[in-house]
Length: 301
Image (cartoon, rainbow, N blue to C red; front, side, top):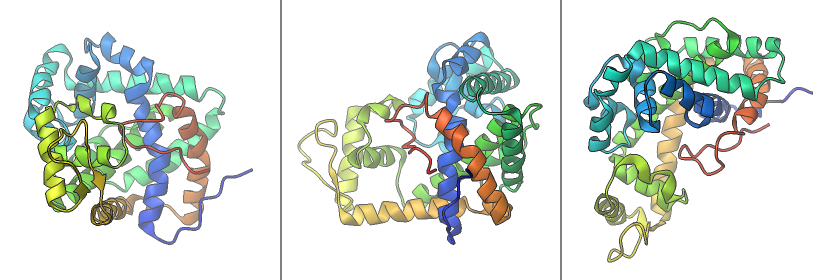
């Protein structure tokens, strides 16, 4: 029986619905053991070497500055420790091959029960959406991924298109955060105060003092209520209604900014793509922790 896309008239809601479907496909590159093994085989030992090299590789052999700007939530010293040193271990072309190899191997293991024609049709439809990203003015990571060569096989095409769409959306999300005058550690502190386990985000290099100061800045803006004499690790704060409303506006801006690619598909094509992507996304969730740093929910079915 075919899965039906909810009747959504708001383009932003359509964009959010599809995010829950393609983000898990992309995320196998962070969570599947085969992805880690592919990076290690390319000489990128250690999780963060593979992460920074693989995600930054579409930009070329860059240093830390553009990665700090584009990735947004990492502390400067953490990025500087990885870049540009990783390019001495594996150049961008090697990193791109490793990330695609690992992602495709991981997806193949997870989706072996799905017919190839199912995956091929999904790849064709999601490529049509990703193709609408185009030059993606103002979307550095989205545009860099959109410019990569098309894959040779359905899973490669599916994963690369999902990655283009997620980076396009992520660029818009960063723009919304900047417009709301949130800095990286404030953004992380807000997510922890909103219920995300702190251990999911503490590995991004910020000190306890930086977390605490960020929490206190949010409290001063009326986003949180907190006990300022305690460190953020002990008292992350409680979101106020003002803070929740402000962050809802950021999420709505993010959704609206991600909507254009989905308008390239006719409604019946969107329904069909949702039907095809949903089992792939559910399969990918088998390796994605329930509590994950992406804040990714299980896709609607």
